[in-house]
Image 1 (tube, rainbow, N blue to C red):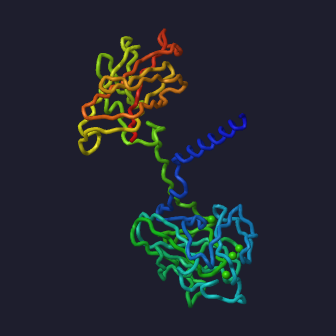
Image 2: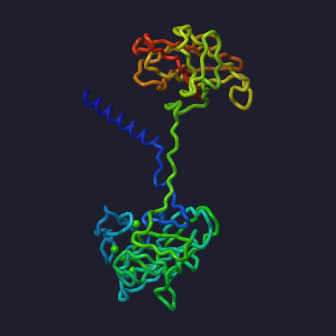
Image 3: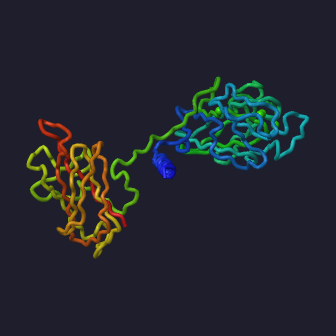
Length: 403
Ligand SMILES: [Ca+2]
Ligand SMILES: [Ca+2]
Ligand SMILES: [Ca+2]
Ligand SMILES: [Ca+2]
């Protein structure tokens, strides 16, 4: 028995854990996007969004969990030292590492952009214009230093053949375009024309296998020259979304009638609108309002909360939502046309204003029906206040209708 109970407890705990993680509102990296900040966008290469045409060559992410025993052809070891964000990508397998290894078009070399190992990076641009592209790459040979850059799956001539010549065997920034007359090119000759503000996909594709890429910078400044690891990634992460604060454990409903907005006080003992707790309550500072029923009413409208009038409507279940209080256990009554259909009392609690849910069961309503909810301000004698003890205020938040 004991073991069984332990099992149940464990299952229950796991369920609670998965529920609580599912309702977590924190934004993940998937909710974030690279944006331009003061005319510059900075992207960690390993944060690509998608990769396609990756059957022949593929960008592999290297980070502190990687090792060199990846089983793909590769002439050099891992280059994590000095890599930004301690991670980078390499295009593997690398089967042409020097002039003596055969060049195979469409396999280890692609003169045409967009044909092999295409990566996408969505970037939000706050302004259109000409953006110069810088790549932080690591080259160890003569056949691992060419890359194609594109925009929205087009491959403008101005961004093909990014070439890295100087700075071998270390992480080096390059923005040179390879030209027939000058294989090494000159800085700031790789650029993209962003046609309008908004999100555009920066795309990369293979020119030479074995290419290693750490980081990318897009800048409007023609004289910009990055140094070291460069600036931090310009990533915008949205704020967490607000979690609901009322009717918290109600997972499913077709209608919620919030007490302060829909019910009216009726009779000698009034309810007031407790705005801070989004509830109706009884002002127990008035001694004549203690230990007596306060009454609130709602007349079912012609249109029954729908667009069209209807003769009647049946709900599978109706839930009365009350608020527990530490200083007393208020009782509640629900009536339909003066006939009691439910009677409940809040349980003792150590937390003020936590929601309690009482099932009224199935309910059929017609226009003109009167729903009445009553409660009492009571004390449990536990919380001293002004020479006596504090009173719970018979707070209730609303009715939940489930179909
Ligand atoms: Ca390598
Ligand atoms: Ca190569
Ligand atoms: Ca390499
Ligand atoms: Ca990196």
